[in-house]
Each structure stands twice: as structure tokens, then as C-alpha cells.
Image 1 (cartoon, rainbow, N blue to C red):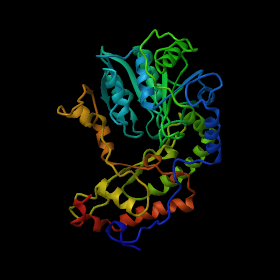
Image 2: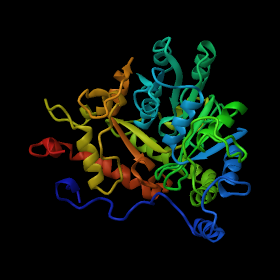
Image 3: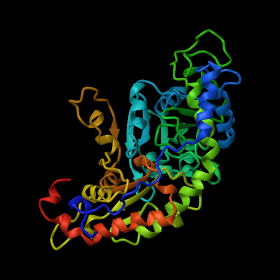
Image 4: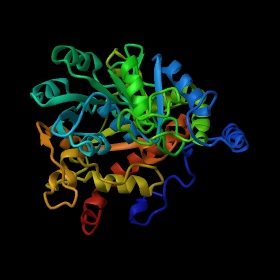
Length: 421
């Protein structure tokens, strides 16, 4: 039992944790209702899409919500709505999913990568402000992993420089800053409902705002440039980025469950953060008990730890790599992200001039983002797992697996294993 599963032993955990996405008869009934309606697309009076927009707006306490085909589509619409076009610069955190940056590039703009706060993995206000130039058109604040960015600082930057703040809330539905939901704090908020997100229909997204004029432009841009309200003329260029009725119906059911699911994940995350942070080499980012008091709710898309290989070393060895640690943890039956994270400015489309779709970008600062990408371990929905919903009697296996790896670290440092992960 003490032999690491990666080295041929028995996995510590044989049965699976809870899965993600989760569903029950309510989703099946909702899908059947749409099927029998024979109206499977379009946003119209009484549609599932319109109803979901109303319910989401009420949850977020914003007056306007438009459902769209994906979070990436939502980012493109939001950027276009605030006037981003060819030659414009948009400030983007260097640690985020690449779509935050490619949405800028696809409109002909230039993403300007700025560093993160290593304590939260979210955009650094000082780094963002230092990167502003005469070409800057907007700033995107990403609430990574469900942890809100410092929106006080972001909104202060917006007021000082007259720049719109777009919130990338793909991973943060349910998170709140000073009791205000993420997405409701900047000029525009963008949500994703892809497979791993806090509510999901496989794909889908939403764009929300307080601004009446922006709302009208957003609704038009997602529907071929038609004015809201059903007119059949097209005064502006737009896309067909609408969301289908089946997805909207599922999302209505999922939204109704969100409060209870967030509470369950908060309990699971608090337990794991406390237990795993006592293991040398692992540090929660941040500990739930150390949250900034302005973080009044967390989205718990993922639970993040930094891994310090120096605590997993012997003699003059360089220490265990984070890649080897994650592989060993996965082998013990613990769902954990397997792929190495890449800072956005190091993605081939921005770093490799020989890449087929090489795109213009500017990196103002990224040292902290690169260090985080090289050391972060993620648990939870980021791995497609419902692990955080589990109770402590199940989650203790995660702790035991980490302790097992720590006790056998010297075996992972020996050749040939150290060079094969």
C-alpha cells in the first residue's frame, strides 16, 4: 500500500469522486419541454433564452443580460461594443485562458500582457496601470479560479484614465466583491457556460451590463447587427452568436442549484486548504481564512496550490518537479490537472513568429505569471471533477495521497523516474 501507484503500487483511491457536470431529472424535463415546443432557437418573447436572461440578470443584480454562444463570443462582443478595433491595445493578465487574449486579436487589436498578484493569481492593478499607453482602449480583469480581482483598483483605473473595464467572469459565477457579484462591477461582464464552468450547458455564455446603450449594442452584435426588438434591418455589422433553446433551458435549471453547490464547494475547499497547507511544499492560494475581506464570496471553480519542489528533495537533488508531483497524485486516483500551464505571452501564437497565426502582442510584465504557471496545482472543476462537493470523510483521501507522495519522494527523485514525466 505504501508503494506509489506511479511506480507500480496500488492507487490509494480506487472509487471515483463526484463527477462534473451534474444533472438530474430537472434537466431532462427541461430538454423535453424544448423538444416538444418545436422552437429550438432564437431569442423571442417567452423563450427559454429570454427567461434565462431575466433570471441571470436578477441573480447578478444587473438590468441587462444577453445570452451568447460561448464565453469567447461574449468577450469579442464586449470588446467590439466598447469600440476595440485594429491597432487598439487591450490590457490582459498574463495568466489566463488564452481566449481572453485571442478575443482581442481576432478583432485586430493587440493584447498587452501584464503581471498578476501572486497571492490571488488575478491581475495586478499596479502592473495594469503601468502598461497604459495612448493606444489603450480597455482593460480585461479576469476573476481566475473563482477569486475576484481587486475591483476597487480596477474601477479606480477606469475612472482615472477613462478606460472601460471588462470583467472576464468565465470561472467566477457566484463570486462577489464587497457583496456585489462579479460581472456587475465593471462596464461589461462576460460569463462562460462551457463544460467545466459553475453552471454549464456544454457551451454558452452571457454578456451583462448596467449601461442601456451598451446593452442594445451587445444584443445587436450577437444577432447579425439587428436592433433589439425584432426589426429586420441591419444598421451595423454583427455575428450570429445566439444561444440555442436547449442550452438556455439547462442553464435555468443549473442556475437554480448554484447557491447550494457553492456552499458545498466552499466547505470542501476550506477542508482541503487547511489540511494540505500543513504538508511541506504546498500552499493554498490563498487560504480561505486569509481572504481579503472585500471577497465576500468565492466562485470555487478551482482550488489552487503552489508547489515548492524544494520541500520534495534529497541531498543536492534539484527537488521534485510539479509535473512529477501531479502525475503521482493522479496515479493515486486524485483528479488533478495534468497539463503544464502556459503564460499567455508564451503561447505559440504570441511567442513564435513562425506560427501560422502569429499575432501581434506586447508584454509589459509577466514574471509572476510565469512563476505561477510553473508551480500551480489545481483541483476541482478545472480538472472536470466534482471533487470539491465531497465531504471530509471522502476528501481525506486527497490528503493521504499527498502525504504518501511526500513520504516516498526519494523514489520519484531516483532515475529513471525523474526524467520521464
